[in-house]
Image (tube, rainbow, N blue to C red; front, side):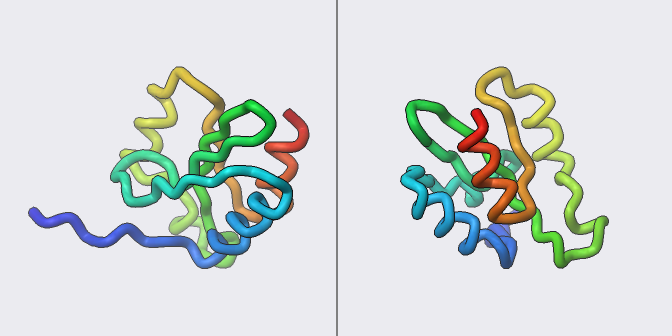
Length: 95
């Protein structure tokens, strides 16, 4: 079965822009199936971020089965689900 294009949440560009403005390096990983959306490096630390759009209904903001499996099995840096610019910035600056 062919893979469909990865869907990008509407708020992802604003979150990436804000992270980069404070000096974070952001690598897009949303094309990887069953993973997370952004790999963020900031001040020597690494953050995994799954972006969910708060404008979507709650059912659309849930982790997919693959994302949930990855999150539960991941043994590295914490896996964060972010909805807003403020959440993303708070995660990297409070660590």
